Image 1 (cartoon, rainbow, N blue to C red):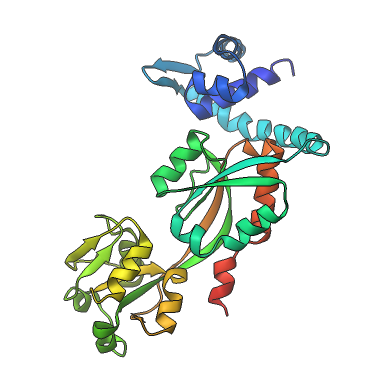
Image 2: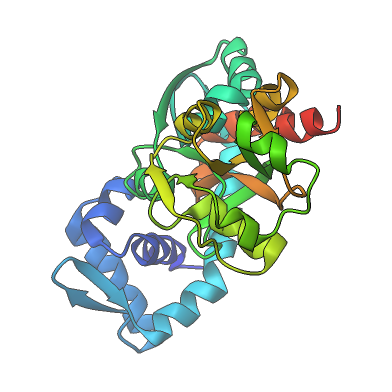
Length: 301
């Protein structure tokens, strides 16, 4: 296929939405990338991108072409990378992004085994969902851990683990409720502590268990889930936490679990499409996934 290289360039521009960024990723000049896009436009007989102030926007024909060819380009790239990796080194630095809470409380074994392979140095970036995906998009991070379902059109991913959401209360107020039926109306009489104004974990629990929204007065907002546990443990209201953050405190009686367990959410290991063509990223992904389900196994103990 004479235009295989041009198709690869097209897919990269389509995913980046920006010719400058695509050129950097492909280690090509911007004029060369533009020339490849023009060549593909001549092949299909239609315009593929419309230039905008901050990049390019795909046309309908570009959407259709990407749907038809992108996965095949990725497969070819991975096959070539597999052959190359038999002789290429995987040594180097890997950048991993994700939530500080999971990385600090659960992922130690996964990351330690990656480092024990003695091939990769690791730089960990912590942040919320928006920051994590932004780091992937900007190539600041090559792999990411997230509890939000990735966009399958932009990323590839595997399920790394699961987290159970638990409703927990300070021990003074929680003792009065632990043997009672917990309802939204009853909880509305207590203060809630949450990650942000949208009450993300609380909202997910209420939707799943009660099929309604939380109407409790908000006592505090803090963008660190570990701090939420400490605030509640100190005597302020209730919150919803991943099981790995409150399991030990519940066992010690410092937090009281009330109500039924919430949903068991997936935690994903995510990378940009095409990233596994790099042997270091593919190696790191395989090692991390070999020690998947660390929290799920702890749930079952």
